[in-house]
Length: 383
Image 1 (cartoon, rainbow, N blue to C red):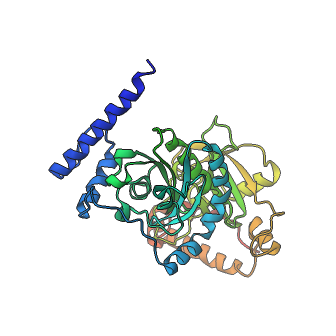
Image 2: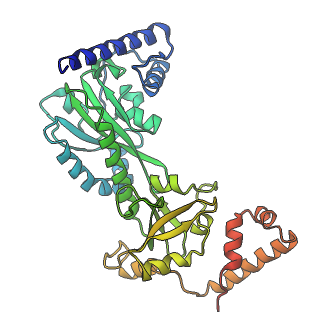
Image 3: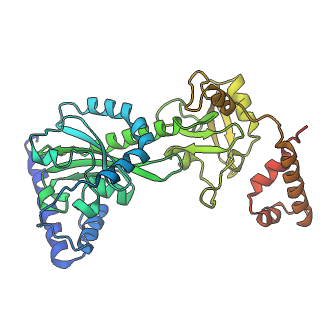
């Protein structure tokens, strides 16, 4: 039984080779069970660019100013990724794989792990500043993850260029706290056995980097979210970060799935009251009084989640100093802004009156959500 595995793998690779030949001969993406649809789409994009599988691949570096700009722009990502990369490279020790981190354009910004510099196939891609985008090097886990925005596994002949047929790689995109793709994480081996399970490992590591990227942003309160019955406090939690006024500062991928974000113009802030059907100050009360007790969290859709509300640790000084950390860690007290809040509330009340009590119509006239109308009208007035 054990001897049948190599022949099965060889048969699959032969079918993949046939699919590539079909694509090149007919110019259309092959419909074949052994070729995942995203691979066929990537091959098709390469052909559309005028690329040929037989042409030589030049692993070119971007200019020094472009690399410097990328490293500066991605400093938060590099900082968040560092401890995760340390753990990841320990997990793959002995497998002859190394880790590559790129920016959203496919430019390498970090390399870790046993990259054999004496092998030109490793040294050509395992360098900071190399452009590994799909446009530059064809179908790879890096280019495919950035184009498809999903975890991928790519083995040998599934690459577009013949020059890349010795590589095996797993990749996963990385998203910032606002859901924008900021880069990708890749595991690459050369002349190694097929290890499709690495797709799960690289996706898990990417999610850990996203969580770290969120947690290093200034915030006052962190909500750990999950469905009722799930254990809170683990890596599968949705994370929602709020400032002292209840404005959402960011969320991880799981939180964006659990709590769909309302459609808004880019740059428009979201308040947690637009997502949660409860007074937002209760979250801070729960964090102060019962930080280890799960909180029932109703959504406007009627669904319910459970959550742990955790105040930001004030002992960790922020980049702006302890005073700023304290300011971010508690709901804002009434101040000179109170008259502005009263004027805003009066404007909303007038809109509701003009709409003869129709909150939905008033919200449309004001360009805000119904949840915001309810929140503003139910908020206590300043002194």
